[in-house]
Amino acid sequence: MEIQFRLAWLKSGNFTHQAFKAKPAYELFYEYIGRISKFAPCRTLGSVSPDEIEKRGAKVWVCDSGTGSKLLSSEGVAECLQRLCDSGARELRIMIGGPDGFSKKKLEELKPDLRWSFGPLTLPHELAALVASEQVYRAWTIIKGLPYHLGH
Image (cartoon, rainbow, N blue to C red; front, side, top):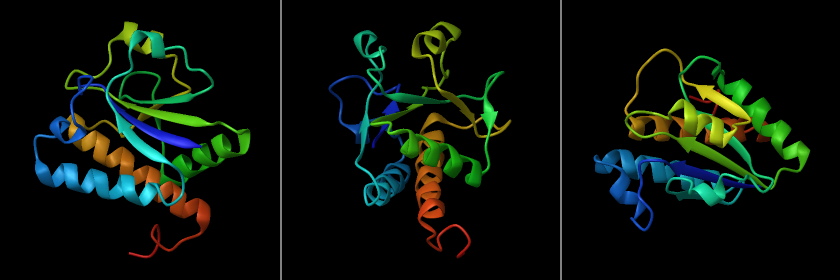
């Protein structure tokens, strides 16, 4: 299954490093993308274009703190990821909104399979991308029984 981190604030054609104001955040985000790639192909893209809204079999997780979003533990993220793998899903798109998140209309267009909340905190979108990437990596280590999750 391929994992895509879709950064909604990144304009088409821009390089991903341009999406991050702070170089250390960009570097750490890509550290986790590299780690995830050891378990599954992983890449980062910009926002979803209207013609891509049709999922074509992709599963969509939207990072969103709004009503109806699900607060997950790291183990809960691992369970959701394992279910996707077991279902034969070929692609997981993890959508990170820009500074204003996603509008109600955009959420309806995206038809997410999961609205994933990181809790009641308001996070800058770059930090939300970093948290999502770390948690997906952590989920893989939980699934594979590696010591990262409990080994600190």
